[in-house]
Length: 180
Image (cartoon, rainbow, N blue to C red; front, side, top):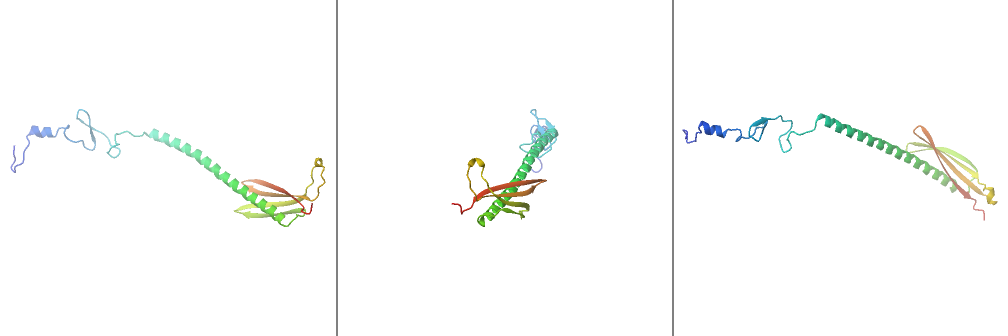
């Protein structure tokens, strides 16, 4: 049939066939079943390639969060342990450097005199107390050697690590160069 302005007018049966559910596209809230009848579905996210209605349940999300949080607590514990170990190594290194410096100072004056010397030093926000002691060294009786002029230089460095006091001791021996 033709209309007034030359357009084709569809009769009721052709119009009904053109608008049957199998020929029209599914609207945003519908999906097609194999027999062509539309079925309503509730959309929770954007329509696209991955919107098949599958997702995680609330229990699955809570379980995943619990596993992740327990894992992160373990990693945090290891991180705190490594920080503590680095701090201990830093303090011990500073104490060793100070002991080496005090031995070098004692030896710089030549053959050291018997006696003690002490003081304190602040290095990298760490308070170090030191004590240098020069004593005569006597060899054990079983060596049956009568050597005089040996001195032992001992340096004791004390520092505070947390609530504990730590001590580092370093010693060396020196002989009088006049011995020949």
